[in-house]
Structures are given as C-alpha cells and as structure tokens.
Image (spheres, rainbow, N blue to C red):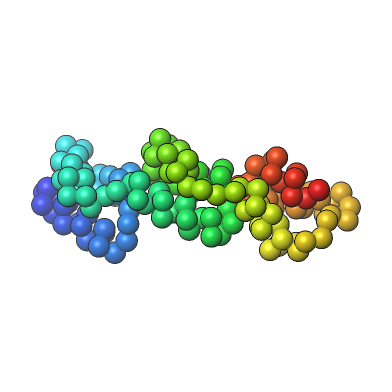
Length: 143
C-alpha cells in the first residue's frame, strides 16, 4: 500500500473509535512497510488524531466504573498498546480511593457481610485479586 492509502486506512479506523498509537502501528504494519508506517504515524500525531494520554484517561475511567483495581487497569491498558510511562502518569493524575473501590467491588458481589469461613474468605480474595485490587486493600476489606 502507498502512504496515502495507509493514511486513509488509519483515518478510517480512527473515525470509528479511538486507538492507541501501538494499535494503529500494529494494524498498519500488516499492510505496509515500516518506513511508510512511521511516516503515516508522524502525520497522524502531528494532526493530533492520536492522543495516547487522552485514551488512557478515558480507559481508566471506564475501568474504574467497572470497579477494577490498579493492576487490572494497567494490564488492560498495556494490552491496548499504551506506553507504560503514559499509563503511570495517567494513574497518578486520577484521584481515586483504591480501598473504597475495592470495598465497593466486594459489597457489589458479596454484600456487606463478613466471610463466614475460610473457604468464603478465600473466594472473596480470589475475586478481588482477579479484579486487580492490591492485597493490602483486599485484606482490609474482608476483615
């Protein structure tokens, strides 16, 4: 594909939804040479069609509304092809009480009762770990 065709493909993709630069680069590299892909990426960035910081903030808000913890959010953002530096900066900028979020996730799934036995406590811990909450917040929530 030519540079113009790659650019049109990228703009068409971005018209439908936001992509990270990593996702777009991966998609374009399937259709063209690396040199052309880099030229198209530079053009997209200069026109501000790609903004990884904005995408990270949007995705973090979406993950928080799903009551996910820090490690799950980081994993989701890495899978979207975002740079770890951008992820860390976006997480620092957001004002969230991670313990409160963990508590909400626990209460949504298990109610406000405490674990009756060891098996139920283990089930709560596994669930909250899967959701990406830290072990310190989990232990505080279930006790």
